[in-house]
Length: 85
Image 1: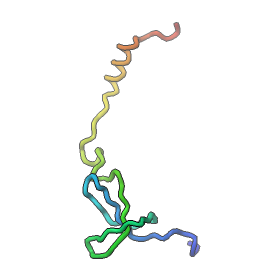
Image 2 (image 1 turned 120 degrees about the vertical axis):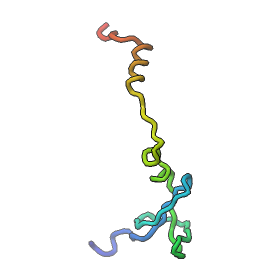
Image 3 (image 1 turned 180 degrees about the vertical axis):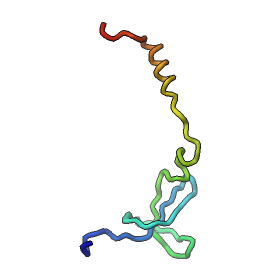
Image 4 (image 1 turned 90 degrees about the horizontal axis):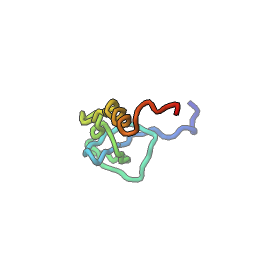
């Protein structure tokens, strides 16, 4: 890697406020706000809207879409076989 052209890759805390969940990782993203982590050090913190702690796919609260029912409802509403007229 060429020196001086890459962004700094440093520890950052990503926090999901909706789920009260945070994790420490390394990233090139930065922030002006900081938080004191469990190890006693202060790290930049980035608030995210969704994480694995709050996303429906990972929490098991995902709803399954009924596509067959939607098609049937559309056909009842607008009729079937009206093509070519």
